[in-house]
Each structure stands twice: as C-alpha cells, then as structure tokens.
Length: 186
Image (tube, rainbow, N blue to C red; front, top):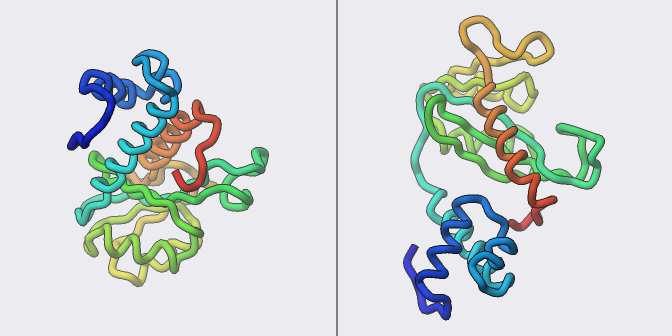
C-alpha cells in the first residue's frame, strides 16, 4: 500500500495492517495499537477501498466454473433464500481449484446475471449451476451448462456439483457474522 502523509507512525500503520489481515475488529485493533477507534475504523475502510479497487480486474475465468447467488443480511431473519425481503443478493463465480469472483447485484434475474457471466467467463467453459430459473439462458448463450437439482441430490453423476461456491458462501457468512451486520454501502 502506498503510504500517503499520515500522522500515524509507520509502526502503528503496520500494526493496524497486521490486525486487519488477522481479522481483528477495528475497535479492538485500536485498543491494542493505542490509537483512537475512529482512526482505526478509517484506516480499515481505506484498506477495504484499496483492495476493492485492485480486485476488479479484467481476468476471464475458464474451465469448470460454479455459479450461484446468495443473500446476505436483512431484517427478516426467519425467511431464507430468494423470498427474503431486505437481504442483499450477491452473485458469485468459482473456478474450480482457483479464484472466486463475487459481486453485489440488484436482483437475481437473468437480465442482471447474463452480462456478468459473459464478461467474466470464456464462452467454451463448463458452467455448473443449481436449478434456479435465471440460469435457463445459459443453454442458448454459448456456454456448456450443467445443472444440479438440489431437491434430488447435491452431487449428481459425473461430478456435477456446486459445493465449492456453496462452501465459499458459508465461510463468507461465518466471517461476517461477528460484525453483527454490515451496512449495504460497505
């Protein structure tokens, strides 16, 4: 990270960076490093902005790709999945044995998902999805599409599954749970 003029010493910046990587909340890190909590919160926010600006790259995924959507947060805790109001939909792509690409989306309709799929996945790739209706468009858009019907089984014959991206959603939600919710803009 390119250091700009800051009143924080290099040592304190490095210590805050260590705590950021370790997953320590900003307020706890502020106490451990000896800075004001607002300073640590601002430093964490600047780090997240820097990471977000560097993550959005033009790399295209190819090979076997798992695609799925998940829903984060919301006021209606008892309702899960697509019908839950107030939750933030996030669409994700996982290259098996490789990287994950996740993006907040306004809705999970095919009109929203198809441009993301076309820009982030090579056309000759195999795309594994669940039985959600928005993925029907993949059959006619140049992708080799394999569908997994979760109501029957989670792993179909021939190794068709989306367990990798489901595992990513599980880990992401577990990691974010300790923050008791994150504002939509973050």
